[in-house]
Every structure is written in structure tokens, then in C-alpha cells.
Amino acid sequence: MSPAMSSATQPRASRRGGRARSRWRTVGVGAGWRSTLTIAVLALLGLAWIGWPVWDSLTHPSREQLRAEAPWVLGALVCGLALLAATIWRDAGRRHDVLAPVAGLVLANCVLRAVLSPSSSGVELVHVLPLLAGVALGAPAGFLTGAASGLVSTVLVAVPAETLPSQAVVWGLVGLSGGLLVRLRPTAAWLAALPVALAAGVGSGVLLNLMGWAQETGSSTSHFHPGLPPSQVLERLWAYTLDTSIALDLTRGVTTAVVLLLVGRPLIVALRPTPGDLRVTTTQQTDQVRPAALERRGDRARLDRLWNEGTR
Image (cartoon, rainbow, N blue to C red):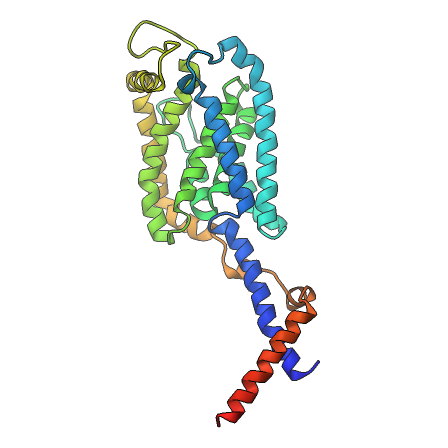
């Protein structure tokens, strides 16, 4: 190979390495179009399922219907999470190791729920790792961490109920909310995650109340009543939340924010991928270079050399 051709290969190799880095960073700092589309569909369908009593309070499922349909919804959610994992892997350039941090966070969250998360007083740590996954690895990874850990931990520590799909989607949405901060630098993302943790605590409480609340009708202004427009349903739901779970929801949010304040920044830095994580060799970079592209770069290199010699 001529010197000109050799010099032409190097920029192309660098470009190829840059492309590989871009593929990794679509997972580590944002999302590729495949995983973005998948997470959008999952989030919208999950919210539609949970918010059924809001957008159509007259036809919302009864408790018996909810119990009968829950296994099908759960199966669809599991398939959706498998598809999300596959799209993350595809957007990262078919690298298997990109899912290792997500698997580790899911396992750690299951341990936290089993050991350090009592079911009373709202002192729970289960939102911490999904939020961190979203902040450090992007919204798809955050949603996958939250939803998967919600499913797996429930199977390990409790008897699955008809509300399990809704709970898993809510945990996934908590991780997705952390993904809104993925473009920020570590310190800024760490500080911005604190109010997000508080909002996630209250928001998740409202969403978790929604399905069970809609199964119990009543005459008070905080009870669900079929046939009301969405605005009135939301007003009654918020009144019910204020009467029943707001203290627990705020405690959950404060607990999450305190843990993030203590350990959030170093974990964000540790989880975010760096260029050193890229394992693309020069051989891999040049294998798929088209000869025509190399020839064009060689011509440009020769023209640059002739121009520089002529201007001396």
C-alpha cells in the first residue's frame, strides 16, 4: 500500500472509531431511534392502561376484569421489555456488554427491595437506582431498569397481584424521568435529580393509586364515579391522594433525594460510559472501508501534498 493510501486509511479508521463511539453514546448519553421509538410506545401504552379510568371512566375495567386481563398485560410488558433490551443492544452496535450495567442495577434493586425497603412509612429506596440508570445511561436504560426490577423483585419477595403490570410501568417511568437529565454534566445532573426524585415520589403515588381507587366507587368528592369527564376524575384522584397517601409519597421522594444527595454523583460518574470503554481495533475499523472511499481520500491527500509543495 502506498504512503498516500496508508495516510488515507487512517482518517477513515478514525472516522469509523468515531462512529462506534457515537453508537455507544446513543445508549450512554441519550438514545438511538430504535430504543427511543420502543420506549415511547411502551410508555404510552403503559400510561393508557393505568389511566383508563381517566380517559374513559365509563368503560374502565372492573376488579374481576382487571384480574382476568392482568396476565395478558403482564405478558405484553415482558415482551416489550425484551424488545427494548434488543433495541438498546442494536443501537449500541450489537455490543452485549452495554446491557451489563442494566442487569447489575436490576439485581441490586431487587436486593434493596428485599432487604432495605420496608413496606410501611414510605421509607423506600427502590426509585434510586432506576433514576440513576436514567441519568447515567439514558431513558431507555432507565425505563428497562425500573420496570424489570419491579417485575423481578415482586416475584421474589411477594405474591404477584393484578396490579403488578401497573407497578412495573410506574417504576419504569421513574427511570425514564431520570433520562431527561442525561445530557447534563455529572454535577448538574446530580443536583437536578434531587427535585426529580421528589416529583417522582408524588407522581408514582398518584399513578399507583389510580387502578385500585377506580375499583371502589363512593359518594364523596374523593371517590371514583363512572361517567365523569377526565378533569373531574383527576380532581377526585388528587383529593383521594391528599386524604390517603400523600405523606407516604412525599416520604418516598425525600428518601430517594437524600440517598441521591449522598451517593448520586459518584455513581453517575461511574455508570456513564467513557471513550475507554470502546474496544474497536484498527483491523475492525478498516475491514469495512470501501475501496472507492479510500481512493477518494488518497486523491485528496495527494492534492493536499501538491498544494503544500507548490506554496513553499
